[in-house]
Length: 311
Image (cartoon, rainbow, N blue to C red; front, side, top):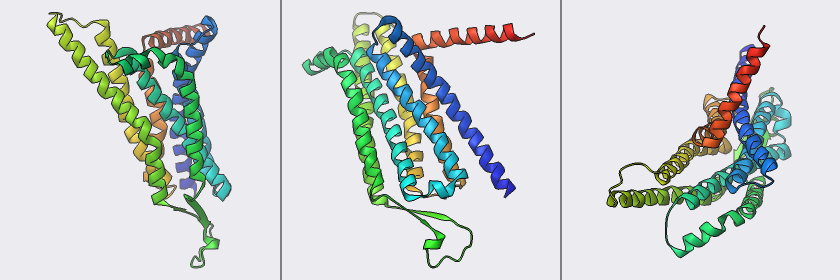
């Protein structure tokens, strides 16, 4: 009993550390863009997307810590049918919002950096900044409607007193998952955002290849700002795709309840789900010159403050 309590405490500590790291990184991005918004009385499109993305991930990681705490320490409350469905619906809503905002960030990078002469591309390039606020709120509405589907015909929670063949005196909970509905809903939810990522990355690579051939035909071998921008956007999109593939697998296994709630595989899935929204903002800070510069300034100020406080 004491060993189980120590194990749960250790797991909560590790996942909590991942979540707090992510909350700090996302909070920093949110604060920088909010400050720019207040200072300039206007928010740029990229900053608006980053703000929405950061808020959704702070909420996601806070909710992740809350959900894990309740499932580990208050199983009776957590496994009530209504409460259990509420946790799953909220979890999918926040996760899906984060995915959509990341997809729009990748799509915006593509629209601003890629160089195509197709009339449809030029029309989108001219109007994307005007449409983006509506697209972000539309994503929230889609995520809300989609996540609501997880409250019906997916999960049924039982405990051993409701199972005639069970003779155990200790109350245990069992979750029955409709795998067919889960697979259909899960894949339906991530299909469009992932297609946006793949298309954005593919077209950016094509645009970079065309730009490189144009540079070579003009006998210019040096890397220009356009090439640097292409490479940065491709790296940012690739980072996210790699992280999200691991997260998508872990999230599906976690939502399907294949593993026991306290099994090592289920714990590994939770580790991966907590690491994904913490790792991506760290990469965004590293690859964005403005965020990287602001982060270094913050580090120097914190270091100076700590130095002044040292007797």
